[in-house]
Length: 151
Image (cartoon, rainbow, N blue to C red; front, side):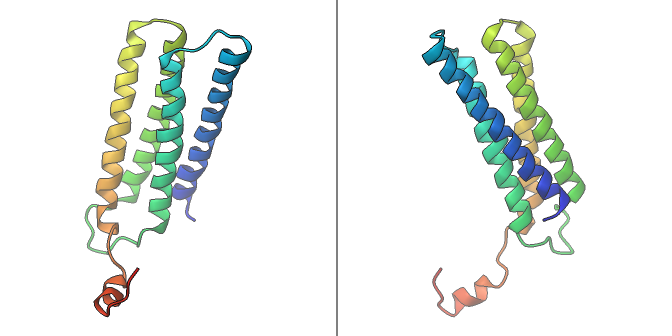
């Protein structure tokens, strides 16, 4: 497993722990202190788990498992993949932080920041899969399928 893959996978696990701890805070808030929680906190919790953990795990595993890029693949760029890692990590963390702030205080620029960081997450995913597109291909299985093998 090479370095960039480890970045994606380990960051995914960190985001999962943050998401689980946020869920624990929400449980405490609702069932122990009986204060409840806002929709913004639900969104922060869900987003850090689904995008921060699940999506980054998918990206890391795809980077690890998919066949190597062919020598003439102009789209695959390891430097771009690393840029998308940092875009995803920073924008996911910042969106989470902004949503936590937004759960407790109304600050107009926080709402704008949430949209900006969300946009960077979308852009990072598009760039990642654009770069990975050529690596999504058959490597030997097309020959076995042609012989009638079922998967």
